[in-house]
Amino acid sequence: MIYQPPFWQEPKKTKFESVVKEIDGEKVILEETYFHPEEGGQPADKGTINGYQLKDVQKVDGTIVHWVEENDLEVGDPVEGLIDEEFRYYCMRAHTGAHLVYGAGRKVMGEVSYAGFDIGETKARIDFETDVHVDNKKLLKLEELSNRVILENRPVRWKVLDRDEIETSDEIAFAKEIPEGEKVRIIEVEDWDKGVCSGTHLENTIEVGRIRIEGKKKLQEGVTRVLFSIAEEALDRDYKDKRSILRVTESLETSIDDLPKKIRSLHRRLEDMEEKVEELESEKIEQQMENFDKYQCEDFNLLIQTVSTEDTETLSHKAKDGVGSDEVMVIINERETLSVIIGVGEDVDVVSANNIIQSASQEFGGGGGGTDHFAQGGGFSADTHELRQSFIGLIK
Ligand SMILES: [Zn+2]
Image (tube, rainbow, N blue to C red; front, side):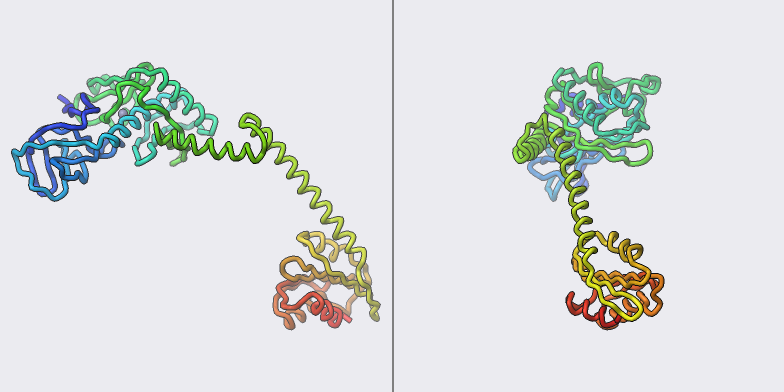
């Protein structure tokens, strides 16, 4: 026979009497216990035995062992166990909720297998073995179906079956870790989900209250973790979300329904404006480029101009391809750090763009380089005027 712990029959019982059967320091075994050990993804119950705080509850070789803080309990002592009601109820809701989400998973993703489950302090998770890509649309559907089943208030029942019956049924989830023994316990949410499970559950779905899918994580190829919160935690998160959304709708002067449309239109406007700014910027550079200061030198003309732009690409292009065959072009860019681009025309062989940059670097720090006909540098410690005068001196 399978051992049927009393918390299967009475999961809501949080106060019970028993007798100490064995004790070894902190380790206490009772004749009978309603404390749920850490098992199958459900954390150990919290609570007290005769007022002593429980530190842990584990199943050791099939026996439920309580770790109790320093105590004077002795074998044969009558004890009162008090289970932390709130935490137990949260676990019951989360565990029942997991069966709802799993059932929904089968409807949304088709073929799925159970790959793990765990109840955390505020969120629970269930791992699905599935090849289906779980996108936001599917997560939303999972949430919708799970909450519908809550509202339908379906009964949740359990029974003990022969292991053979489980292995031949493909309806039953959680079947991968069939416990040792000839019998196993099955939890059934009417016409929704059946699974092998040893945890504490509600007797109906409505008490789960609310399920909120919080997200997913791909653990490995073919395994997706789905996180969810339940009841009060889920509602708190709902309110927080709604508050944020309302703040956004207020500032954008729109409604929740129209929000996606509004954001799309703002996005388009932004793109248009960015394009316009880019156009204006390059127009501005073009204009500045038309007004180079010119110096007549012996074998060439020196053109020099100071600009301020982030569009260094246009500057490089200008110095490379816009320089006349008998010209030396110097463009000083004042934006953020002072940088210089030099283009030397193909017929000018008395000036090397690279050498000029190297000389400027020696004088003002910074660095850069290039070829005889094109070079650029930056990081100079000088002001624009100083730099300009220096380049004119170096080139002339
Ligand atoms: Zn369960």
